[in-house]
Each structure stands twice: as C-alpha cells, then as structure tokens.
Image 1: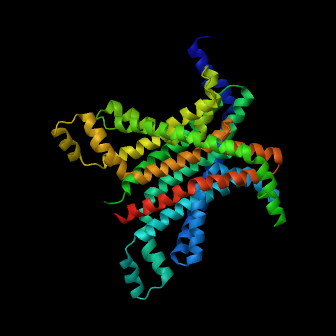
Image 2: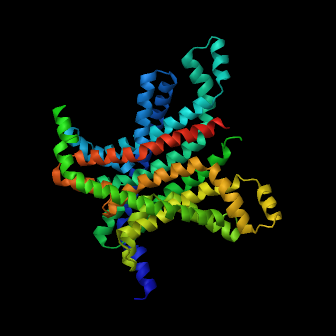
Image 3: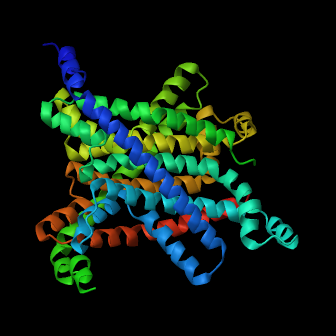
Length: 226
Length: 223
C-alpha cells in the first residue's frame, strides 16, 4: 500500500464511513437540539438578569455582577464536569445532556447579560428622562424605549459570543452525550479507524461554517457607527 | 447542609488532594504560558498576510480562518490526538494541544488583529513610507502598535478564553488542573477536588474578568 492509499484508508475509508454515518447523523441532530436549547435559555436568562439589574437594587446588582463574573471566569468544561459528577452526591441526578445544557446556558447567560447591560447603559440618559417625563412608567420605558435601541447594538457582540458558546456543545462528549464528537469517537474505537472523526469534523463544518459566515455578515451589517 | 459540606467542601479530602491539584495548577499555568504566545504568533502571521492585496493570498486566508473558527477546538484536538497517529504522526498529548491551539486560537487572534490593522487610516502608512520607512517598518513600528491598542479589550478577552480553554487538554490526559481534579475525584468518590479546581480557576481569572469589564466599559464610553 502506498502512503497515499494508507492515508485514504485511514481518513476517508468509505466502508467505515457508510457504517458510522447513521450514528453521526443522529449526533448531528442531537448537537442542533442541544445548541438551540442553550441559545434560547442563555439569551433569555441573560436578558432577564440585565432587566433586573436595570432596576438598580444595590445588593441584588452585586449578586448579579458576582454570578456573571463567576461564569465568565470558569472554563465551561469545569462547570459541566462539576454538575455531572458533583450533583449526584446531593441526590440530584443530571444526565450528560442536562449537565451540558445547564452549564453552557449559564455561561451564555453571563456573557449575554454583560452585553445587554452594556447596550442599556449606552442608550443616552436623555431617552430615559424624555420617556419618563411624558408619564411612561419605568418598565414600559425600559421595554418600549430603551431596550429596542439597546438590543440593536448588542447584535454583533452577541452573535460572535453565541457562536463560540454553541461550539462548546462538543464538550458534552466528555460526559457521554452521543452528539457529533461523542458519536465519532465511539465510531473510532468501534472500527479502529479515524474516518468517523473526519466525518464528525465535516458534520461540524456543515453546521458551523454557515453560522460563522452569517456571523461575519451580521457583524459588518450591524456594526457600531463610529 | 451537613451532606453538602461533606460532598463538596470536604476539608479532609481537599487536604489529601492538594499536592496533585498544585501540580495540575502549575501545568495549567505552564500550558497557558506556552499556548498564548503560540496563538498570538499565529494571529500575527495571519493578520500580516491579510495586508497583502492579492486574491491568491486573501481567499485561502479567509477559508483557513473560517475553517478553524467553525471547528470546535475540542474536535480539532481529538482529531490531532486520536486521528493523526493513524497517519504515522504521533505527537503526544502536549504536541497535540500545542498544534491544536496554534491553529484554533491563531485564527481568532488573527481576526482581532486584522480588525485592528484595518482600523488604522491609510494615511498613517503613507506618512510613514514618505519619511523613508520600508513597508515592513511602517507595518511593525507604526501600524501594529496602534492596532493593538485599538483592539486591546478583544485581545485580553480572547486570551482569557484561551487560558480557560486549556481545560480541554484534560480530555487527552494532559495532567493539567481539571485532569488532576477528576483523577482525585474518581479516587475519592467526592466532588471536593473539582470544587477546589473551580475555585482555583476563579481566583486565577477573576482579576482578568474585572479588568476586562473596565476596559469594555471604557471602550463603550469612548464612542
């Protein structure tokens, strides 16, 4: 066998690939579901935290800042492992999927809160004062006047963060979730051939390449006007 | 409450696990000191290439960057560590981590530095060239320092992410902090070592997060 043949046999072994394709496809959909759950939970929780922070209750704000700092400082994999291996000791069994979902949602929540908050504070104070002076209440002002302006500014930084964190779904393979990477690794040890990893890498590219390119477009489209 | 302390804040177990956690912490620091400059080096190379006005450089560069930004770092690492040996390329856990980080974080640093370089008006280069500086001198002495200053918050933020990312080296059995904590956890059947590792990461990185918050706020206020 020439080197080239050996290379093809290792990384593009069609027989192995055909064998493992169904599992990788299952993993693909699991990754998509996990990513969507994380995006929905993380972005909504982050917005709620930012709104609560806008109320300006001192002790509550310190708590929010601490929580946000905590989840910005801890590596996502550490949080996943802690939830997965730690919680059972407290009688709370969490599946690998549940641990990955909760951990990455908390991380996205923390980053999203920072970005939303930056957006809210970037809206000029005059907007608040003008709205309040016409008799609009605090929450309607926040919801109808400030947030619409703030959210537009948050789109570019939120997009890149959200993409980066949803790529973290691959970490779920560490706690035995059969998403793309998990399925591919299982395929490698089953067939003793790394072609499933090639397939897995391709699956990630199919999933994330359009997202990365879309993200690049959004970042220029909604860029801050300097 | 008693159970909670027993399971997560067990002093006895923390004391027992402390030596190997220390080793792990040192490995994490050592790894960071190696992979951060490696990634910045990769980023500088990519950013400098992006200043070349040729479609033959521009398009491969864009494909390269998007490719390594789309691939989750853990996938890249596993591919290098578990896949390449089949092609006769055995490089060990440390080599795999170094290569994976160079490719992945280099792409991110590259994008940040490129944005920084593009934020510098062309007039700066023209003025520098007209005083007799070479193209290379103008780029490295005039443009890059200003570019770095403009994107400093992004650079710090990315560096924080890179240091956090070193925890994935535990997957390829490199004995850094998370790996050691998991070893200790599996021996003692107790989550305290992982909590201790989390506390160590937090103490190490919290100052950076605070600094970042201030840098980002200042950047926002300046607009």
